[in-house]
Amino acid sequence: ARFVVNRFVMGEQLGHGLRRLGNPVAWMDGRGQVNLFVVATGWGGWAASRILHLRQSSVGTGLDELAFEPVRVLPLSWLWNTSFLVRNAPLALQDGGMVLPVHFELGIKYPMALRFDNQGRYRGMVRMSRRPYLLQPSVVPQSAQQWLAFMRDGRPNGKVAVAQTSDGGQRWTDLPDLVLDNPDAAVAGLGAGSGEILLAHNSSVASRGTLDLSASSDGHRWTLLRTLEQGGQDDEFSYPAMLWTEDGLWITYTVDRQRIAWQRMASGTAPFGGQP
Image 1 (cartoon, one colour):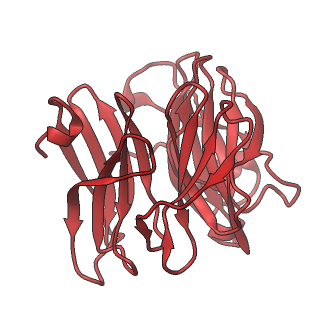
Image 2 (cartoon, rainbow, N blue to C red; image 1 turned 90 degrees about the vertical axis):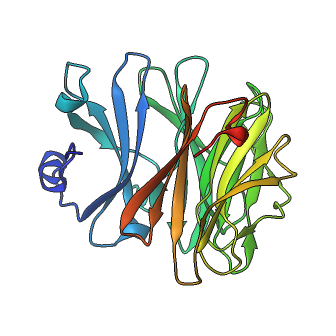
């Protein structure tokens, strides 16, 4: 591991101070350049943060020489572009562009979908839900035009929330909540092929002490595949992320906000049958 972005250097390049850089999300555009989207905070903390768009400045493809330069703060609101945060992976589009799920968080919370073209240029945003307590959307395609967004519920004793689009992200509709509990915690969804959807989520009612992996064929009815972590009331296994590669399913998450853990389920007949 090594540093690729420094808040002091980046603050000098932007012309204003940065207190924290966090929640990095990477995407490779149609030119083969890596774009990095990072939450940048000032003195207002996370709720007054902005999303910083960085682009690869290094010429080579080696990870040891990867470097970034700022493109700009994304122009998302009249209020100095504050209170928008990124966390989950983008959805790649057939035209080489992508949709980046983000959320607004200042007093109320709601999810947004940002669209970028294949050159990495920002093209606009759409609100994904009218409900004022949802955040950190994770977008999973069911087909080229129909996608689901699974979201964290900011209310006490909430459930995993869902929204759907049937026109490739132009308009979104709220769906009934899943039966899965959500203790105000992030979730991660992933399409696993053959119409299957995987969801990593905390299933305890009032804590993040249990992290489960569930599967669904339609996005509404879910079956527990395995418990990834089981701890006590004060333990925390949170902020999962998933990636499907040739050798299987990779799942990462934080442990007690102190370190990153990962599990790999080897590829077999399906990720459900693999061994971690």
